[in-house]
Image 1 (cartoon, chains in turn brown, yellow):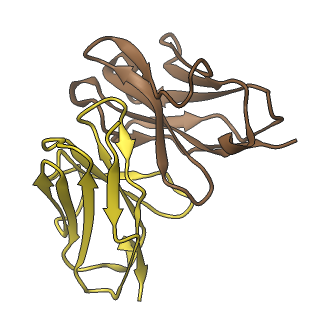
Image 2: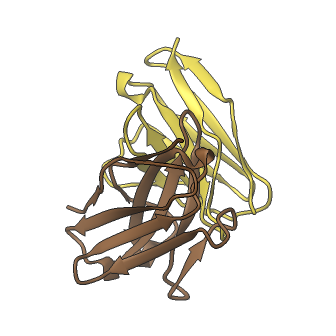
Length: 120
Length: 107
């Protein structure tokens, strides 16, 4: 049984950075294609970036130029998403989401979500 | 970027009725369309991938169809637990994109 467990809620001021973690159990990170998706209050889902197993590269949505970094620590099966220069419209629930590398691009597994609030 | 347009925004139906949800892509995505269900305060749940393949454990009352630019999710007979928001997503091209969602509410 795959589980994705995310870090807790964060409150940040505009201009600050946030780093959200997502620990995987039941699978190794090497077997999964990890992604991050966010959802602003009352809004739809927005893909932020993730691992392209065909190229072996992390791809980011163009909406976050230079502001987003996704990293992995394979020794602990934990993935991280860092978002810099936070603005009020970055207030959202951030989800890590994953699917097997053999069937990338959709998400069988989701974390519980991390609420990030950006407010002065 | 491929834009997905879901309709209607809200569907008001009674338990036992049939629900038909639409997702239209701005360009052809072949069969690479995914559907998720999301309930309040919960993460999305995978229902259907590649237009018509039900995910593990998903009841047979959920079925997906379509190809190219027009896709449909059908719930043959609504159960009380099916009232939720449904999202479509394409995996044909980077960036991955989602539709705006359809809320299925109790009439």
